Length: 239
Image 1 (cartoon, one colour):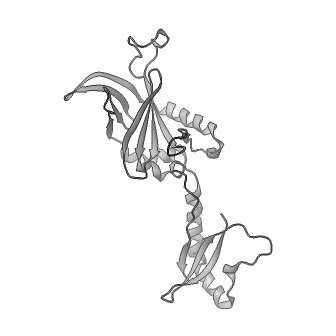
Image 2 (cartoon, helix red, strand yellow; image 1 turned 180 degrees about the horizontal axis):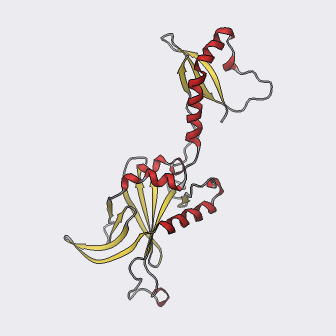
Image 3 (cartoon, helix red, strand yellow; image 1 turned 90 degrees about the horizontal axis):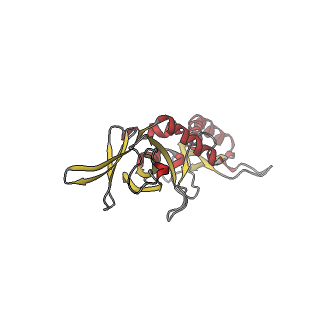
């Protein structure tokens, strides 16, 4: 976004030079922010270095992150496990970058426990590559996925893949899956309200699970933040 310098005076008499976002000027249009004569020129010169650093900061924030960056933001989840039960028979456990399990609890005892996979870094990288190829908006390398439209609109996520879980076997499983093993995908989404943990579990295909994980750490990745109307800050420095 183009920016221009505008000189402003606060109520206490202090003078500032501000970086103001604006549409591209038509050819020949005067830059109001650069007017002000010799004194204004000196004011602008004193603030140039500061404003340059501010402008660089703005541009830096506008750059999308990569999948590696997102994983760095999620580091505080390391060595922690999270649980989810929707009141049904099953409870689900996610241990960050370690494992996903499904079990039934009777008191303090786990029964009917199944592994839904252990963390697979190679499959996670392949998943990011697949997501990257699906949408050109993030062709810069973020590997962000889209969960589709819901009540809150399109939800962006960063996914981890867990593979090689318990064998997919049982009376309700057809012969086509008898040699398959359970696997899961944990989708990290931005939690703007600060809540953290598993918010839902789906089984879109036999023995394949998708767990949505809300965390404010994901909000640190620009590509994972929900889309809001474009608002840009006006940044000022003392002249």
